[in-house]
View 1 (cartoon, helix red, strand yellow):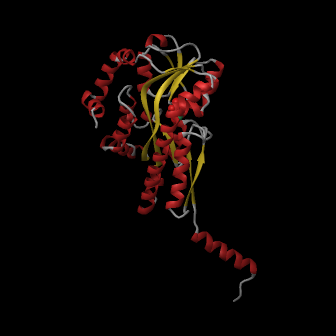
View 2 (cartoon, rainbow, N blue to C red):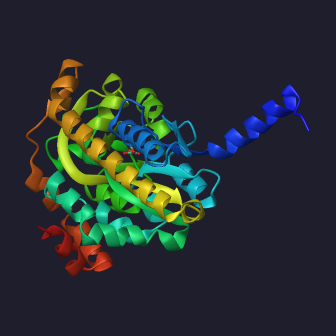
Length: 322
Ligand code: EAX
């Protein structure tokens, strides 16, 4: 029997689509592509493709185009979206064990935070996602958060009293910022620029890489380098999608996330190094000598509450981690 040209074309198409069967998955972030988070997911996507011989293609979505962080985590949990890269902002609402990482003044510096996340404490926390329908592939980074506002220079917690500030939808942050005297307004990230622009809130707090990539300098005059809390990020995958992968592909996804984290942290370092000069050049007033001791002291009552909730021994284990 002889195949006609159309049948032959169909056959070869069928064969080639078997040989190159490609599964497409989605990953999203709430910041711009040109950011430490964009670098994270772009690197992840490239590495997954490379490490699976192109059998998996990762489609990347930026600027909250698939929704804010809480919505994208919900979508990953449901499986309508395979992957998301998020700050820990809304994460405690899904996996309460991660709350401890959002405690203010817990980490000395980025090296300390990275060591904890990459060490047994952080790796154990990643396993807590399994029971909630996620595979947590790796910790990554948003950076140390600093405060901006449109009203005044902030040097001490007294300067914060009565300022209306957008916070993440994170119970630990909200409790702590109330302790600073801030009027807290939880809001998803994609709404923040407009809220600042329209004066719905006076300020917000985020790491330099977020402030720069979101162009908050266009709507905020005052930046204070409070570094009041470390903000982790995380690569999350739908658990069932991960479980379906072969052992080798699982490893490929895990390794790709590690590469994403490496690129992400390098970009945070870069943005931290040049961020203040950049933002000053764009017209922001930057207070780089805030009275840190007063900020720490203002949180003493809230900290007592955190020690009760999380256990002083658990907090000390993180604080003293070398
Ligand atoms: O993940 O919501 C926030 O302020 C986050 O830091 C931001 O979306 C980057």
